[in-house]
Image (cartoon, rainbow, N blue to C red; front, top):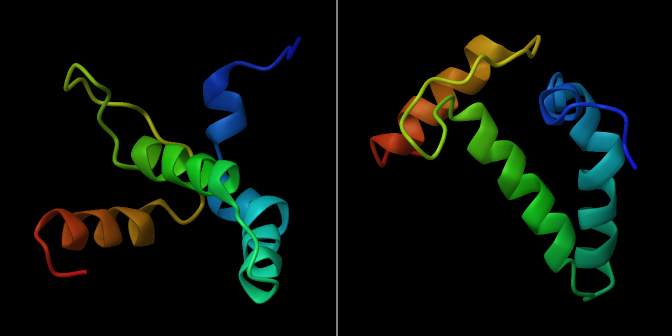
Length: 81
């Protein structure tokens, strides 16, 4: 069992995702291999950084790139990304 809370795992994701997941995604793309669960993990983090839970309540996001992430999320929400 994991002894970390979900938010602890998600925090600082911009620093964790590249080496923990995105490098693996790149490998699978280069080798024409499936990466469904990696994509699900990235999608879960993207959902988290949106800053709103399923009930519409705000989620506190802890990430050193938060301003950059928020700008990207806002652009995406407006259909400009």
